[in-house]
Length: 454
Length: 56
Image (cartoon, rainbow over all chains, first blue to last red; front, top):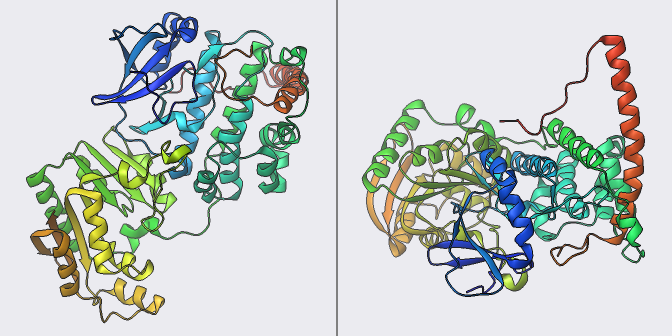
């Protein structure tokens, strides 16, 4: 019954288990006092009301198990993206939510014992913590046990993104338990030494954090923070991150794709009408929009589906999509088809690959094929096979003919001949994996939309 | 304090640094209070602080 889930084996206070009807959280007896305080003090209600903590229902413990105190059924997560797939604004949301939770918890005599962005999920434009058993009591002059973890897993990556560019978000994939602070400190520019938050919590902290050989007496652990100090420390970090509205950015051109860089209005209208018609006919439950760009078609899909995942490799576009998300149907993350998130963590079971997580009833590949063909050097068979693997049933794919200006430019830049890039060849590959249900030549363009079924 | 609920190693160097940080915060908070007092006396207003409780 309480067989550990691959993602929660470290926690001794609780355990997450996946069953047929979703994820459940077992609270163990050793966490009884903390759990009761969380629920009875009003802390849980305050956090749930502010959309900071996942809500749950208590269920009767169905089997006799002396170690289990409570069985919780939390609100189920629509889709989980990982921090290394987040854009800068998504990181900011998560860290600010974390600091708010800590701030509120302190007023109820508790503090967070973990500080990892992996305890958060993004939904409806908010970051929500799902680790209900992350609270412990805080007493005057206690140290903050999650402080180092907070700096290594939260503050460090966001400082690196703020000062050195958003690619650092993706690089956290290579340090799932956080990067050492002396390493982070070394990467940050000189000006970060003049910011009090980075100076104290990264640079100076980094001088000590790696020294595990220091013998810490009980007295030292009691020379922590008074409530006032820990609140002011929390506030100070919150104020800094709130000011870091932008990460360092390298040049980028995709964000204005629809505004400056596209075919005629007639093309856009016709394309939208056709896609709407197909969505309306099929009513897919889940849609995956690969190469979502500004998310225009993801939001259209969200009018018909219950879950839409907009995947885009450009982090500015992901930020743009995130800022428009109003409901829980649409989610966005950074992803690149040629570098998909693999299975990671212990035994490759802590984090599942994007191909497993994002599999959807319908997959969009709009204005994408020429990029896969010319930029990623994929042939039509590989592309068709990929779409058939990631869709459980349908795909809508747009083929851009070699006469199109975009294809001419991209093939010329890449020095690849368009000889084999033919619509006939593309269709032949599609038909190995799909049945072509409908084909529509988009108005005022050299582009064709395909509705495909496996 | 180091009970079984804690499975994250806080790091002994990090704990030592927190003791130092606590001292630094005493000084910081002290100066912040002086600045706030002077600001109130000279400009007649206090600095608006972020309210982490009510951001929505």
